[in-house]
Image 1 (cartoon, helix red, strand yellow):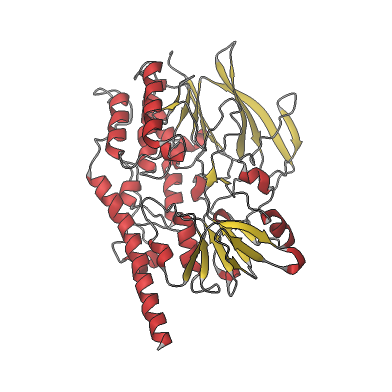
Image 2 (cartoon, rainbow, N blue to C red):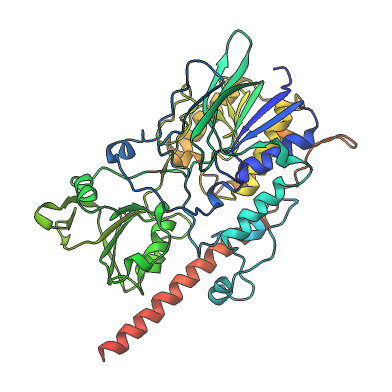
Length: 481
């Protein structure tokens, strides 16, 4: 594979930010262009000013086809009336959101996240709290891009609508649409590149499972069916009867936050597959009532009853909040299908086996997040610069087959835990180190202490929930005397 000279990076969140730096430091590329559909950097850490769009088209949300591309004009460049189609660019950030990973292991290796702690985090976790408010994390990402002229590489308010490999020229053709806030028109154009790095994240399109009667309930009672992505605070739920669906971190956080506001017990509908790091501690609160999955919802004749698989039901439900995860959506890559909510045929979660000039940064489930992005970005930069070589295709295919046998052919495939050290070392060894005097971002050796710190941060949150559970049990016990 010949070295690439023109690089397109999709996304200016944390994965995109470190990818820009890795490629710029390599000093091997003539063109580096970044396309970000939001108005500023930060990705899923950007807090929206506008209220979220109401959920609709539940059939497509359930079958994971909700995010459709917009057809381009026949002739480009062109202006068209501004599209009104919802593209799920809003984020799940709410005012009090904090990171749930220790900042030291969340940071990139050479750029620590600032030691700025919120009053609320100090109150909950003590003066040594390792967590950071979402605004600190977002600014950290922006600061990474606002150095060395990187900000001049980025096109904001720009959606990549299509990515196509041209066989004749062996180029990647990107169809782009700029839509400025408040504007009346969209501007469409195309650009050409030797390689594309997809760093757009996969926490944007909400997944809502099919439930009999859900769409009818949502239609009769607007803004009563939500995804945790739309959660912006607790006040709207004051005194309301709420059911939260899901068993992972977002569902746990929302259940706990509603205890002192909503009608109790807050009902948690869970299937039993709790988050691997946190377990079910949050759901053991005495004012959270666990129920099995929802079987159907009845909303005819003014009824608002939710029925569960065990035959029980809850009447007069005011809100249903789904903490059921996201759909991995790549509408701009029609030739790259997803399977079981992951992207198949990607070696080391980075290079597409059919064409390594298509690379991914951040194609993983929860883990060391930012650090993983850094290692992947450096590897992608080295390979596309021609300074590192991928193994033969049969080796890449065997890696994927072995991982499917180990992890399964679904989202767990993308989770690095518990083998963090093995993955980091594999990527670092393949990327290699720049020789003295040569350009390129250097990756440190994996430090086993990172895993201990990572787990200690999770334990702090578990301890927080356990304290709350014990305090509530004691308080309720006294109230009964």
